Amino acid sequence: MAQTFGTVVRQHVAALRLLIVFTVITGVAYPLLVTGIAQATFPHRANGSLVKVHGRTAASSLLGQTFDLPPGTGRTTASPDPRWFQPRPSAGSYDPLASGASNLGPNNATLIREIRERRAAVAAFDGVPPRTVPVDALTAGGSGLDPDISPAYAYEQVGRVARARGLASAVVHRLVAAHVQSRALGFLGQKHVDVVELNRALSGTR
Image 1 (cartoon, helix red, strand yellow):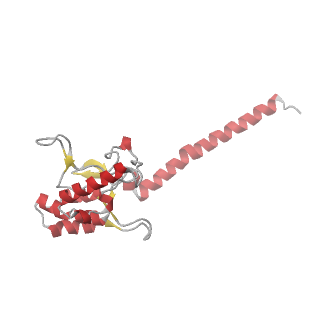
Image 2 (image 1 turned 90 degrees about the vertical axis):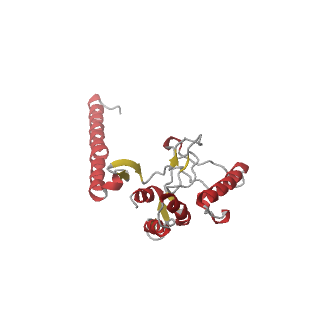
């Protein structure tokens, strides 16, 4: 039997009421509740894990970035700054708008050539034998924005950073050791070092 006009109106009004109620609950109340809990319990992480240097926001510890010398005398392009710990390679040069991997397979000739060139460049830059260069110094992360490197790669850079800054190697070594982060929950992932946080600490080392 066909519904009357009044019945149709009542059904639409009931549906509108439910829409308003659930919009308020899921679109206003729930986000405010979650935001409030996050701000009260871990505000630093909730606000993007921002890194401040001398009171100014310089980066986020969740996003990698380059630590390069700008183009200048004898340099037509930016080059790694020996005074800073360097991140792993990035297919997008740590540009947030170009986040992503190279999508090159392990047997790709281009990738094989790039790894060979990176090994030689990193070994020469850090002053170590090519055979000792860690894997993460040669391969880019999937996101292109990974701020973490392996402890092995961080320790490899200690000598070069210490020489460039006129610091004792033991001082820089202890700084790296203090920034080695354990596996999440004790078994997820691998030990790692956040380069952004490490370099922030390094900036205050004398």
